[in-house]
Length: 305
Ligand code: SF4
Image (cartoon, rainbow, N blue to C red; front, top):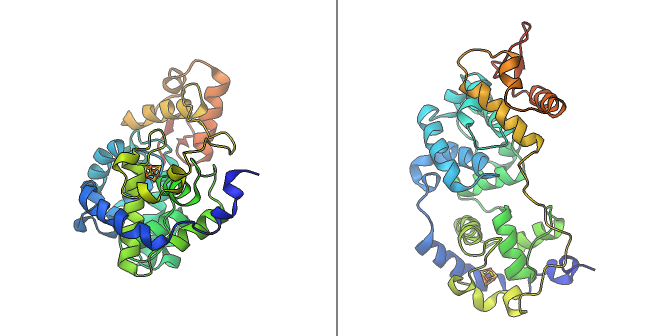
């Protein structure tokens, strides 16, 4: 039996309320001043940031976020452009299907909600490309509602502080969701702050590689620390290899199209990767994902419709 299936995964061994005040107090003192946390970001700024931050670190997101919001300050501004422009502006953030999904969400917001990002969780969840995490994050961060917002940083903090293990499972479990709900403060505004604060704690103090318990506001209550930091017993953690993968080839192919002002010939794409089978597979994948549009004359471009 792994540590994650222990009863402690079901019931928080620490009193939830004993964590709230120190974590929120720490956040109020140490939170980074990020543009999507400022009031002027609005719900659209929060939504854009959540799409970008899901698989990309803050420092890489910042310049792209600023340019994005300057160019498309409202969902309708983005919706009026071709999806390929979203892919182009996504630049090197990686996982570019997120750009298409954000464009699709902007179109739906414009058509269904008069251009305003909806505030109800169910309406957010009904938008294309928006999953449970993003709906909860936007409802919480933009509208101050009470939702369990479980990103990788929060899951790691809860695994350590409440469950007493070093790492959460590879994929989010029902037990983690239950624990997150059990740990939520009752009051809306405090719950929203708790969500942001636990995320920041995981990003700055209780990181995947290095937990800075000396700087942690809940060190005295952290189950994993108090248990002597037992070694990880669960399945091996997923690696983040990139070199040589289809993802790398896709990135190179897409970079050619992003930088081009006109459709590009096949030869320009062939030049970026030597191995033809992998190159063809990557290009086929980009076309299948709607990120690249093949033209009848054999050239390629970013999607226009
Ligand atoms: S005490 Fe250490 S391990 Fe526990 S939550 Fe804080 S930083 Fe993480």
